[in-house]
Image (cartoon, rainbow, N blue to C red):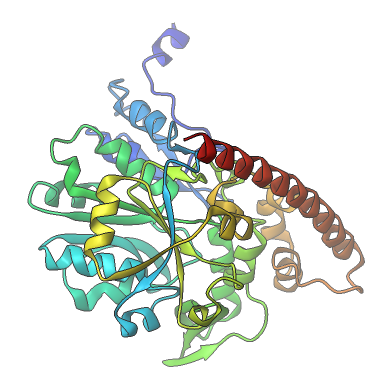
Length: 405
């Protein structure tokens, strides 16, 4: 009897597939779903069976958010090197200031903009409605950003004008799935960011625990320089040593499990626009110091808005870009043992040992850790060879299709 009764409950993404996009939570009118912070420092969705009525709207929106997000048809999207025409906006941005220019355009049209913001010690998606708030959404944030309340904000404004939502691919996928059949979905513009993975909150918590005088993180990057700047007793300071929030993110040893087989890293996506850094320093050398972005345009909507904003676009080839940034087209990365043992290591290791392992701040004297570092290097090198072969096949297919078209 019990097994038959359980059939009414929705089947949501497992811990290995869940992205914490919160679409399932937002669609549940019974408030039967809640995000819960697990011991590995990531949020997962928990079902309260006593509140669930078995409508399975959450299951449907969850499945749609993880299916058919995109593909690697290089003929389906346009690729550019780009930056804002406004030099101050470009200077203040992490890369080319493209997002800021898009935000300005939408705000001038009377719309709203939603993106990730550092709020004290947390990162969360917030809404802005004026140009002098754009700075809150600019800059790289190598933290998980809470999507709580985002869907209701969009719902409140989508009927009245433009809504620009910016987030990583899985977050955009949740938004697109939720509003797929909305009568005014054409008012919604989505911009996803080229993403390197979502790190565990453990990195941030341990950092603040160790640096007890730090009030909060100010920024993670200045253009191409990775610099962790913090506020310490009211003064801005740069952390000189390797740090868990920055280098822990770069090492990728604490990511959500879904990040290791990311379904959202593809050249052609359901979003209107994709933005990221242009890591090819041989291309347009003089522009890199000022800030330069990679921009992928996927839809006619995206094409219209980016050509209406004050953005300089320079057509580039896929070859100039994807070999320098695999996360545009390739979402597979290896899961190493420290990820599997993250909870145990976080509770048992000293801060020093934990930082050495999860920041790869390892020296020859650290014998056991050094062996892992060497093993990780070999595995990543093999993945790199696999990726390069994949890129060659992708580019060959693209060139063949271009000749035949």
